Image 1 (cartoon, rainbow, N blue to C red):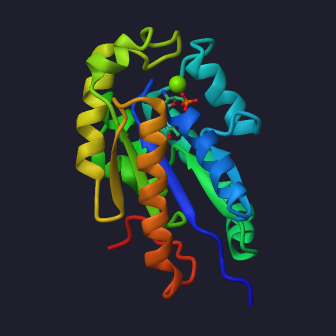
Image 2 (image 1 turned 120 degrees about the horizontal axis):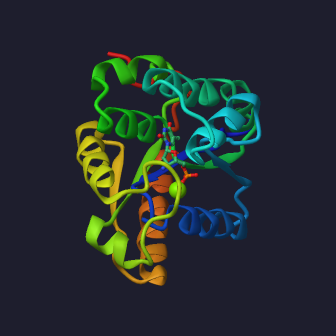
Length: 211
Ligand code: NYM
Ligand code: MG
């Protein structure tokens, strides 16, 4: 029987280096002979993803609840494919997940518990890497972009909301270090987790935030 792959989620505020580090991690895992694929949320290519993309680029307006549900739907529509890949032995590195969903929407003022609801029952990550960078350091990296949410005041709130969501599966990575050192810290964390999980890897669970 093939052992299932690991579901590795990478989270953090904008400009924390997530996408760069996700690419590096996928490469490093592949080089170790581990069948790995990169997944990114939102997936802007699907129907829901196109609406999300237009909203983020400020080309359309949507009610805060409605866009929250679209982000969640964008994850749900991927779950069947992702679970099949994992069960076939593929490891997935996921750039943002439901934690971003709740952190961003609740930072805008929506109720945190309300925000969690649509994502209850998603695939449970084996590990969440949180790339931690102060908002000041994030701004020093050439400032935020032009998309909706990429503003200092909101990013500060987003970080506070992320802190309310952390649990035992979260590993904090000091993202203020050099790219190479962040890469090393992530690798060591993943390697330790892989060793830890190897002997008693659980069946894939659809129980995110279930009590
Ligand atoms: N975002 C991302 C949300 O508001 N809710 C979500 O569920 C997800 C997955 O979209 N500023 C926000 C966070 C980002 C933006 O993400 C797009 P990226 O990784 O910058 O493309
Ligand atoms: Mg961004």
